[in-house]
Amino acid sequence: MGGQPPQALTPRTELPDFAVAVDIGGTKIAAAGVARDGQLVHRTSVPTPRDSSDSLLEAAVRLVRGVCEALGGRPAGVGVAVAGAVDPTCGDVRYAPNIPALEEFPLQRLLREAVGLPVLVGFDGHFTALGEYRAGSGRGSRNMVLLTVGTGIGGGLILDGRLYRGSDNLAGAAGWMIADPAALDPASPRFTGNLESVAAGPAIAAALASAGDAGDQDHPPASAEGVLAAARAGDQHARDVLSDAGSFLAYAVTGIVSLLNPDKVIIGGGLGSTGVFLATVRTAVTAFAQPTSRNRVVIETAELGADAALVGAACALFDAVQTTAES
Image 1: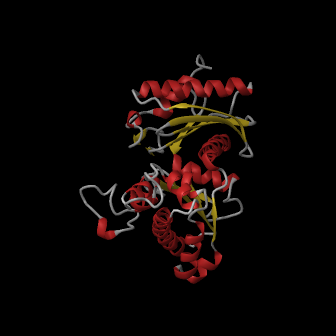
Image 2: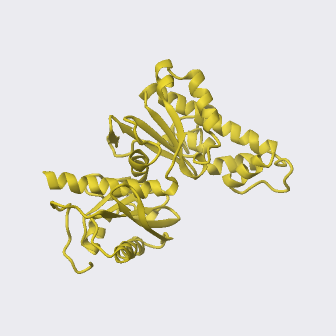
Image 3: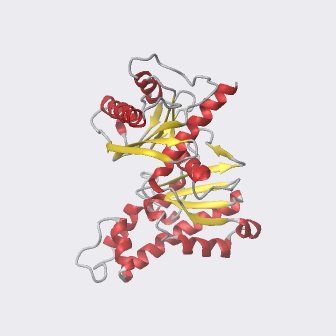
């Protein structure tokens, strides 16, 4: 594959039955073959190289080639989800706070040249939303909002059946919504007063750590998962911390429901997918959202988990190649 000439999104009469999807995150790069119906037919991953953009690109190329070899065929192309802002006109990564090696990096062009396949790079929040919409909890909806709650808080929107990207390809950055005005600090707006600073995993762990003796435990849990486990074991401090975080998230969802009148709101991410916030969010929306919108909306947890970005990246690639074929 490496010896083939670079390709753009090339028109073809019959598209292959699978695409390669790559999800580049701050800790690992995952890759998979994804069939047209959204089913993953192969998956693999490696730790994300932190030393240079060249090392990161090389790792992605190896994963793509490995998936192609495992599946024994030539895919429709490669869809890549990146935890950062991507220029939709060229696929360059402009901003990736958790992956500094990718900032101002022409990932789409260089990966295309390396593997000789059509390549489409996009924001992982958008592709995660698209994956849930096509093959997960969002199936059957026309207007859908996805919120991912994990190490950070992000998401994506499907409006009138189409992925909404926003003017700068960053729509869905829900972690920046103001949640605690009293805590806002203009010197560090990313870390204070917004939804991510009070409801994401690190904030939840920090809140329990500051709660004193953390109940019956000798040491407070070092992660949101630890907080969740402590709450399930009956630790009242942990339950209170999760309740506070859930309330902040619930009020944010209430505003989103009133503003956008969606069919569905899907709560995903490593923490959100557990369902720990579901009852709190539903209660707040029922009590406070715009009446017509609250009666329509269905609020559920995400179905695809960590696979959603891979499925969405493949779907976006299939769509792009099909559009080119029809033009």
